[in-house]
Image (cartoon, rainbow, N blue to C red):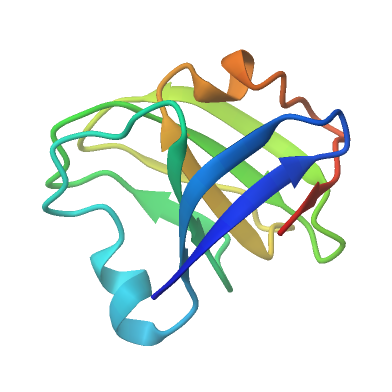
Amino acid sequence: MDLISIKSDKGSVIESVIFANKTLSRLKGLLGKKGLTIQQGLLISPCNSIHTVGMKFDIDVIFLNKQNQVIKIKPSVKPTRMVSCLRSKKVLELASGSAQYNNISIGDSLSW
């Protein structure tokens, strides 16, 4: 797993994001974590759906298309839930409230 920073086209930066692009890292996701800070996250690629089974905290889920544009945001997804977006190619998982804190909205472009 690589550690990356994500920047929005509005200038906000999330500094400590794990890039999960291999089978094992994608399967593990955030399982075993006790929580995330506002500056931490997980970027899963390829991905169009996630679940929070086994997690102990809420997360914001941001779905991205092939061009890394935000196409759907599900704030404060609780444990034991599943969310999806069939058009999505990547999913960014953040601490609950982080999408709003970082002013991320649908249509924004993200880079890393």
